[in-house]
Length: 331
Image 1 (spheres, rainbow, N blue to C red):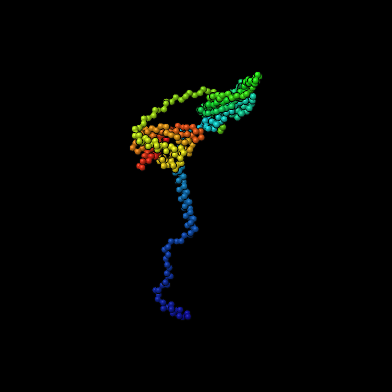
Image 2: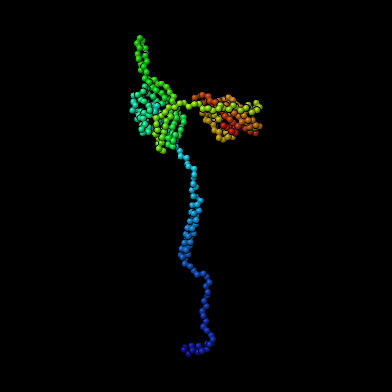
Protein backbone atom coordinates (compact mmCIF):
# COMPACT_ATOMS: atom_id res chain seq x y z
CA UNK A 1 0.00 0.00 0.00
CA UNK A 2 2.85 2.37 0.78
CA UNK A 3 4.45 1.61 -2.62
CA UNK A 4 1.19 2.44 -4.49
CA UNK A 5 0.74 5.75 -2.56
CA UNK A 6 4.33 6.74 -3.40
CA UNK A 7 3.93 5.93 -7.10
CA UNK A 8 0.78 8.03 -7.19
CA UNK A 9 2.53 11.03 -5.78
CA UNK A 10 5.30 10.66 -8.28
CA UNK A 11 2.87 10.56 -11.25
CA UNK A 12 1.06 13.75 -10.10
CA UNK A 13 1.83 16.95 -12.12
CA UNK A 14 4.16 19.38 -10.37
CA UNK A 15 2.19 22.58 -11.17
CA UNK A 16 -1.10 21.29 -9.91
CA UNK A 17 -2.42 22.95 -6.68
CA UNK A 18 -5.02 21.64 -4.33
CA UNK A 19 -8.39 23.02 -5.15
CA UNK A 20 -10.12 25.23 -2.54
CA UNK A 21 -13.64 24.29 -1.55
CA UNK A 22 -16.32 26.44 -3.18
CA UNK A 23 -18.19 28.68 -0.70
CA UNK A 24 -21.46 30.32 -1.69
CA UNK A 25 -21.59 34.04 -0.94
CA UNK A 26 -24.66 35.21 1.05
CA UNK A 27 -25.66 38.73 0.03
CA UNK A 28 -28.90 38.83 2.23
CA UNK A 29 -29.01 41.33 5.16
CA UNK A 30 -27.87 40.11 8.49
CA UNK A 31 -30.67 38.82 10.71
CA UNK A 32 -31.66 41.09 13.60
CA UNK A 33 -32.93 39.84 16.92
CA UNK A 34 -36.77 40.19 16.90
CA UNK A 35 -36.99 41.20 20.57
CA UNK A 36 -34.58 44.06 20.05
CA UNK A 37 -36.62 45.19 17.02
CA UNK A 38 -39.85 45.36 19.04
CA UNK A 39 -38.14 47.16 21.91
CA UNK A 40 -36.66 49.83 19.64
CA UNK A 41 -40.02 50.32 17.91
CA UNK A 42 -41.78 50.93 21.23
CA UNK A 43 -39.13 53.47 22.26
CA UNK A 44 -39.60 55.28 18.95
CA UNK A 45 -43.42 55.44 19.32
CA UNK A 46 -43.21 56.69 22.90
CA UNK A 47 -40.83 59.43 21.84
CA UNK A 48 -43.13 60.40 18.96
CA UNK A 49 -46.22 60.56 21.21
CA UNK A 50 -44.39 62.57 23.85
CA UNK A 51 -43.27 65.22 21.36
CA UNK A 52 -46.75 65.40 19.85
CA UNK A 53 -48.41 65.78 23.25
CA UNK A 54 -46.05 68.58 24.26
CA UNK A 55 -46.74 70.46 21.02
CA UNK A 56 -50.50 69.96 21.36
CA UNK A 57 -50.54 71.12 24.97
CA UNK A 58 -48.59 74.21 24.07
CA UNK A 59 -50.99 75.02 21.22
CA UNK A 60 -54.08 74.45 23.39
CA UNK A 61 -52.59 76.46 26.19
CA UNK A 62 -52.18 79.42 23.87
CA UNK A 63 -55.57 79.07 22.18
CA UNK A 64 -57.61 78.55 25.35
CA UNK A 65 -55.93 81.20 27.43
CA UNK A 66 -58.77 82.98 29.29
CA UNK A 67 -59.68 86.40 27.98
CA UNK A 68 -59.62 89.14 30.56
CA UNK A 69 -63.11 90.59 31.13
CA UNK A 70 -63.07 94.25 31.93
CA UNK A 71 -66.84 94.58 32.52
CA UNK A 72 -67.88 93.57 36.04
CA UNK A 73 -70.56 90.91 36.32
CA UNK A 74 -73.90 92.13 37.67
CA UNK A 75 -74.60 90.65 41.10
CA UNK A 76 -78.27 90.27 41.97
CA UNK A 77 -79.42 91.83 45.21
CA UNK A 78 -80.87 88.88 47.12
CA UNK A 79 -83.17 91.29 48.98
CA UNK A 80 -85.19 91.82 45.77
CA UNK A 81 -85.80 88.16 44.94
CA UNK A 82 -89.02 86.16 45.11
CA UNK A 83 -87.82 84.73 48.43
CA UNK A 84 -87.65 88.22 49.92
CA UNK A 85 -91.11 88.98 48.54
CA UNK A 86 -92.57 85.89 50.22
CA UNK A 87 -90.84 86.78 53.47
CA UNK A 88 -92.20 90.35 53.43
CA UNK A 89 -95.70 89.13 52.51
CA UNK A 90 -95.78 86.71 55.46
CA UNK A 91 -94.60 89.45 57.80
CA UNK A 92 -97.41 91.77 56.64
CA UNK A 93 -99.92 89.03 57.44
CA UNK A 94 -98.55 88.79 61.00
CA UNK A 95 -98.24 92.55 61.39
CA UNK A 96 -101.96 93.21 60.77
CA UNK A 97 -103.07 90.57 63.27
CA UNK A 98 -103.41 91.19 66.98
CA UNK A 99 -105.39 90.29 70.10
CA UNK A 100 -105.89 93.28 72.37
CA UNK A 101 -105.76 91.06 75.47
CA UNK A 102 -102.54 89.18 74.59
CA UNK A 103 -99.63 91.36 73.50
CA UNK A 104 -97.14 88.56 74.14
CA UNK A 105 -98.77 86.34 71.49
CA UNK A 106 -98.13 88.95 68.78
CA UNK A 107 -94.64 89.61 70.08
CA UNK A 108 -93.81 85.90 69.77
CA UNK A 109 -95.13 85.75 66.19
CA UNK A 110 -93.11 88.78 65.08
CA UNK A 111 -89.84 87.79 66.76
CA UNK A 112 -88.52 85.51 63.91
CA UNK A 113 -88.98 88.37 61.41
CA UNK A 114 -87.43 91.31 63.25
CA UNK A 115 -83.80 92.37 63.21
CA UNK A 116 -82.16 92.36 66.64
CA UNK A 117 -82.57 95.67 68.43
CA UNK A 118 -85.97 96.52 66.89
CA UNK A 119 -89.14 97.28 68.82
CA UNK A 120 -90.76 93.94 69.71
CA UNK A 121 -94.16 95.09 68.35
CA UNK A 122 -92.62 96.71 65.22
CA UNK A 123 -93.98 100.11 66.22
CA UNK A 124 -97.51 99.16 67.30
CA UNK A 125 -98.58 100.72 70.65
CA UNK A 126 -100.56 97.99 72.37
CA UNK A 127 -102.00 100.22 75.12
CA UNK A 128 -104.09 102.08 72.50
CA UNK A 129 -105.75 98.98 70.95
CA UNK A 130 -109.52 98.70 71.34
CA UNK A 131 -110.24 95.62 69.18
CA UNK A 132 -108.80 92.52 67.57
CA UNK A 133 -107.50 92.76 64.00
CA UNK A 134 -106.78 90.43 61.10
CA UNK A 135 -105.54 90.88 57.53
CA UNK A 136 -108.19 90.81 54.81
CA UNK A 137 -106.16 91.18 51.58
CA UNK A 138 -102.52 91.89 50.66
CA UNK A 139 -101.08 92.90 47.29
CA UNK A 140 -97.47 93.66 46.43
CA UNK A 141 -97.29 96.96 44.60
CA UNK A 142 -93.61 97.88 44.21
CA UNK A 143 -90.06 96.73 45.02
CA UNK A 144 -87.30 99.32 45.47
CA UNK A 145 -83.62 98.47 45.90
CA UNK A 146 -82.23 100.66 48.70
CA UNK A 147 -78.72 99.18 48.98
CA UNK A 148 -76.54 96.24 47.93
CA UNK A 149 -78.30 93.99 50.46
CA UNK A 150 -81.48 95.93 51.29
CA UNK A 151 -84.82 96.65 49.62
CA UNK A 152 -88.21 98.16 50.38
CA UNK A 153 -91.50 96.43 49.52
CA UNK A 154 -94.69 98.46 49.15
CA UNK A 155 -97.97 96.62 49.83
CA UNK A 156 -101.59 97.55 49.43
CA UNK A 157 -103.48 95.90 52.28
CA UNK A 158 -106.97 95.81 53.70
CA UNK A 159 -107.65 94.69 57.27
CA UNK A 160 -110.62 94.36 59.57
CA UNK A 161 -111.02 95.06 63.28
CA UNK A 162 -113.37 93.10 65.52
CA UNK A 163 -114.85 95.29 68.26
CA UNK A 164 -117.14 94.40 71.12
CA UNK A 165 -120.15 96.68 71.20
CA UNK A 166 -123.17 96.97 73.46
CA UNK A 167 -126.66 97.75 72.26
CA UNK A 168 -130.09 97.94 73.85
CA UNK A 169 -132.62 95.29 72.98
CA UNK A 170 -136.23 95.77 74.03
CA UNK A 171 -138.07 92.77 75.41
CA UNK A 172 -141.58 93.90 76.09
CA UNK A 173 -141.41 96.69 78.61
CA UNK A 174 -137.85 95.87 79.60
CA UNK A 175 -134.67 96.97 77.87
CA UNK A 176 -131.75 94.58 77.91
CA UNK A 177 -128.14 95.39 77.04
CA UNK A 178 -126.58 92.90 74.60
CA UNK A 179 -122.87 92.63 73.93
CA UNK A 180 -121.79 91.51 70.47
CA UNK A 181 -118.64 91.48 68.38
CA UNK A 182 -118.72 93.20 64.99
CA UNK A 183 -116.29 93.42 62.10
CA UNK A 184 -115.28 96.96 61.24
CA UNK A 185 -113.74 97.65 57.88
CA UNK A 186 -112.16 96.64 55.64
CA UNK A 187 -109.70 99.50 55.96
CA UNK A 188 -107.28 100.15 53.10
CA UNK A 189 -103.66 100.97 53.86
CA UNK A 190 -100.44 101.38 51.86
CA UNK A 191 -97.36 100.25 53.77
CA UNK A 192 -93.61 100.02 53.09
CA UNK A 193 -91.65 97.09 54.55
CA UNK A 194 -87.80 97.34 54.69
CA UNK A 195 -85.88 94.08 54.12
CA UNK A 196 -82.22 93.19 54.69
CA UNK A 197 -80.42 89.98 53.70
CA UNK A 198 -77.20 88.14 54.43
CA UNK A 199 -77.41 86.36 51.06
CA UNK A 200 -79.16 83.34 52.55
CA UNK A 201 -82.17 84.59 54.53
CA UNK A 202 -83.97 87.82 55.43
CA UNK A 203 -84.98 90.09 58.30
CA UNK A 204 -87.20 93.14 58.70
CA UNK A 205 -84.79 96.07 58.78
CA UNK A 206 -86.94 98.62 60.61
CA UNK A 207 -90.49 99.50 61.56
CA UNK A 208 -92.89 99.48 58.59
CA UNK A 209 -93.99 102.93 57.44
CA UNK A 210 -97.38 103.92 56.05
CA UNK A 211 -97.44 105.81 52.78
CA UNK A 212 -99.97 107.49 50.50
CA UNK A 213 -101.90 105.78 47.74
CA UNK A 214 -100.05 106.07 44.40
CA UNK A 215 -101.56 108.42 41.84
CA UNK A 216 -103.28 107.03 38.81
CA UNK A 217 -100.91 106.43 35.89
CA UNK A 218 -100.82 109.31 33.42
CA UNK A 219 -101.03 107.56 30.06
CA UNK A 220 -102.64 108.78 26.87
CA UNK A 221 -106.01 107.25 25.92
CA UNK A 222 -106.14 104.37 23.47
CA UNK A 223 -105.89 105.43 19.87
CA UNK A 224 -109.10 105.71 17.94
CA UNK A 225 -110.11 102.79 15.80
CA UNK A 226 -108.62 102.76 12.30
CA UNK A 227 -110.99 103.32 9.44
CA UNK A 228 -112.65 100.26 7.98
CA UNK A 229 -111.43 99.16 4.59
CA UNK A 230 -113.81 99.17 1.68
CA UNK A 231 -115.40 95.76 1.25
CA UNK A 232 -118.56 94.65 -0.50
CA UNK A 233 -121.46 93.49 1.65
CA UNK A 234 -121.29 89.98 0.24
CA UNK A 235 -117.66 89.48 1.38
CA UNK A 236 -118.40 90.95 4.81
CA UNK A 237 -121.41 88.64 5.21
CA UNK A 238 -119.38 85.58 4.18
CA UNK A 239 -116.59 86.42 6.65
CA UNK A 240 -119.13 87.00 9.43
CA UNK A 241 -120.79 83.65 8.77
CA UNK A 242 -117.46 81.85 8.67
CA UNK A 243 -116.26 83.43 11.93
CA UNK A 244 -119.48 82.39 13.67
CA UNK A 245 -118.51 78.78 12.91
CA UNK A 246 -114.85 79.36 13.76
CA UNK A 247 -115.50 80.84 17.21
CA UNK A 248 -117.99 78.10 18.02
CA UNK A 249 -115.40 75.41 17.29
CA UNK A 250 -112.70 77.49 18.99
CA UNK A 251 -114.64 77.62 22.25
CA UNK A 252 -116.25 74.16 22.42
CA UNK A 253 -114.96 72.07 19.49
CA UNK A 254 -112.12 69.58 19.19
CA UNK A 255 -108.68 70.13 17.69
CA UNK A 256 -109.66 67.98 14.69
CA UNK A 257 -112.78 70.09 14.04
CA UNK A 258 -110.84 73.33 14.36
CA UNK A 259 -108.14 72.08 11.98
CA UNK A 260 -110.44 72.42 8.97
CA UNK A 261 -110.99 76.11 9.74
CA UNK A 262 -107.42 77.33 10.12
CA UNK A 263 -103.93 77.02 8.70
CA UNK A 264 -102.41 78.31 11.96
CA UNK A 265 -101.61 75.11 13.86
CA UNK A 266 -100.82 77.04 17.06
CA UNK A 267 -104.54 77.73 17.58
CA UNK A 268 -105.92 75.28 20.13
CA UNK A 269 -109.56 75.02 21.30
CA UNK A 270 -110.55 76.34 24.74
CA UNK A 271 -112.19 73.09 25.79
CA UNK A 272 -115.52 74.63 26.78
CA UNK A 273 -114.19 76.92 29.52
CA UNK A 274 -116.06 79.73 27.79
CA UNK A 275 -118.83 79.30 25.19
CA UNK A 276 -119.21 81.49 22.09
CA UNK A 277 -122.48 83.42 21.91
CA UNK A 278 -122.30 86.02 19.14
CA UNK A 279 -120.23 88.54 17.22
CA UNK A 280 -121.01 92.00 18.54
CA UNK A 281 -118.94 93.93 16.00
CA UNK A 282 -116.90 93.02 12.92
CA UNK A 283 -114.69 95.49 11.11
CA UNK A 284 -112.60 94.75 8.01
CA UNK A 285 -109.32 96.63 8.41
CA UNK A 286 -107.66 95.49 5.19
CA UNK A 287 -109.31 93.90 2.21
CA UNK A 288 -107.48 92.15 -0.60
CA UNK A 289 -108.64 89.93 -3.42
CA UNK A 290 -108.63 86.65 -1.50
CA UNK A 291 -107.66 87.65 2.08
CA UNK A 292 -108.77 90.16 4.69
CA UNK A 293 -107.62 91.41 8.09
CA UNK A 294 -110.58 91.58 10.44
CA UNK A 295 -111.12 93.04 13.92
CA UNK A 296 -113.80 91.24 15.90
CA UNK A 297 -115.60 91.86 19.20
CA UNK A 298 -117.02 88.50 20.25
CA UNK A 299 -119.28 87.66 23.22
CA UNK A 300 -118.60 84.49 25.25
CA UNK A 301 -120.28 83.03 28.36
CA UNK A 302 -118.24 81.61 31.22
CA UNK A 303 -119.19 77.96 31.70
CA UNK A 304 -119.26 78.14 35.51
CA UNK A 305 -120.31 81.64 36.51
CA UNK A 306 -122.51 82.16 33.39
CA UNK A 307 -121.26 85.73 33.16
CA UNK A 308 -120.79 87.11 29.65
CA UNK A 309 -117.33 88.30 28.58
CA UNK A 310 -116.30 90.53 25.67
CA UNK A 311 -113.19 89.32 23.84
CA UNK A 312 -111.36 91.26 21.13
CA UNK A 313 -109.47 89.55 18.31
CA UNK A 314 -107.57 90.50 15.17
CA UNK A 315 -107.63 87.80 12.52
CA UNK A 316 -106.41 87.31 8.99
CA UNK A 317 -108.79 85.19 6.93
CA UNK A 318 -108.14 83.64 3.53
CA UNK A 319 -110.60 82.44 0.91
CA UNK A 320 -109.41 79.22 -0.70
CA UNK A 321 -109.92 78.15 -4.33
CA UNK A 322 -113.03 76.12 -3.43
CA UNK A 323 -114.70 79.21 -1.90
CA UNK A 324 -113.99 78.15 1.69
CA UNK A 325 -112.56 80.46 4.31
CA UNK A 326 -109.71 79.74 6.73
CA UNK A 327 -108.00 81.67 9.53
CA UNK A 328 -104.31 82.19 8.71
CA UNK A 329 -103.34 84.47 11.63
CA UNK A 330 -104.99 84.82 15.03
CA UNK A 331 -104.21 87.41 17.74
